[in-house]
Amino acid sequence: MQALLGELNDAGNALNIVVLDACRDNPFGWGRSGSRGLQVVSGQPADSIIVYATSAGATAADGTGRNGLFTTHLLNNSCYARATEEC
Image (cartoon, rainbow, N blue to C red; front, side):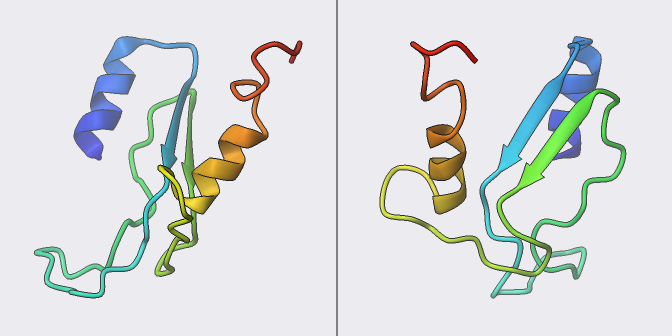
C-alpha cells in the first residue's frame, strides 16, 4: 500500500482517490507485523482521499456480483453510473 501511495504522490495529481473494498480483519493472524488486516494508512499523500469499505478489525460484505457490497453501492450512486446525467 505504501508503494502505491508513493506512486500517487510522485504523479503530482490534483486529487487521488483510493477505494479499499476489502475486509480489515485477518482471520489467519500470521502476518509479520502482528497486526490484523488493513490498518489506517500513514503517510497519505497530500490531496488524497482513502475510503475503506469497513472499519478497522471488521469484515466487509462481499455482495453477490463482481464487486463487494460497498463498491456496488458506491458505483450505483456516483456520476460514473449516471454517465448520461449531468453531475
